[in-house]
Image (cartoon, rainbow, N blue to C red; front, top):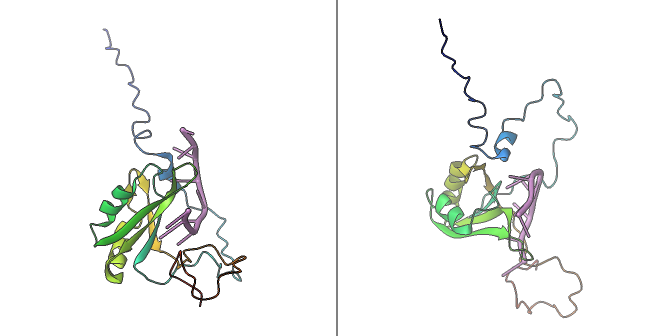
Length: 158
DNA sequence: CCTGAGCGA
């Protein structure tokens, strides 16, 4: 009577290393009893979404995801005119988010609905409309910037 | 080389 010693193989954590850590942040958004939505604070300036445009803001990117990877990922839903992963100019590393510009707003909408919440390089990405932003930092001390001296950007406050 | 909310040189 000899029992075959079958070692309880270490079948632990077999998928724990197959997914990045940021993956679980999506599933950990449950509040047991702390369900208290602020009744008086329904609008948070800054967190609101931007109006539909051809420009998309993609966040949640893997910091190692290159621009071309972002482009070809969004190209499945439309014609990407321009794609860019924002990288820090000082170090050159990605900041974890980027921008994708489609040819039309229709394609941008399909791309947003098609890529929002999807996986890219093992990370759940979020796609939303990018806010209109000045191509240049806010006016500070432009003493020689009257109205016709736009030598850097084309967008002005008029 | 970084590990995570975020809107770009």
